Length: 281
Image 1 (cartoon, rainbow, N blue to C red):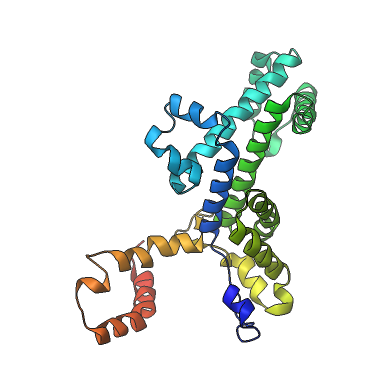
Image 2: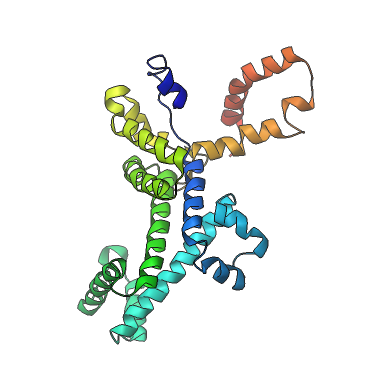
């Protein structure tokens, strides 16, 4: 994007798509900065959820798999504690609520009927949640509910990629950019905003491209399952880049000839396309 900006209008016809995988890693790093001195990491290590040696990678966002699993678990735990505090404050019997929820589980999805009392409880919790966000239940509760909201944003962004939901993907980007600005992630703060502007104006700059993005152009699906989309840059890391780096399969393992390496690079896209079409499911 920087090259495109500096050498315009030479590359103006090229649409550059930022990798969602690297956006997520930068986002996890920003979330790690937010919670680093909060006591949350101590809770995770003392409970055995996260090993002490993995703590630095978790905070900096470099351990992607740990981040994408532990952050939602921790946020869900805090959300449960918050809901229990609401039930306790309003003297609501949790056993009665559990009984009603179990009754709903036995009903068919098209026939689900919420009782009046359950609707009142859920509406009351929604109001209680907003009061926590405003700091009416204390600074600590507000701090952790912000963390819960940050993880909700990550889950929405991840969902947009896995399902190929273009509209949700675009909606999440400004909120992600806001966090990048807050924690001084200069590159992503700058270029995510530019990327968002390119996306909302894509029909004017690249007619027809929006339809491709809506039909699955924001992720790669390597199975027939509807929730199996992966970020494009993550797919590259797991396939072509991994293959090229391997001593067993990479070009460097079988020849030192410059000409052979050039032929291998030139025909690589054709060979990977053939492998994809011939691969047995």
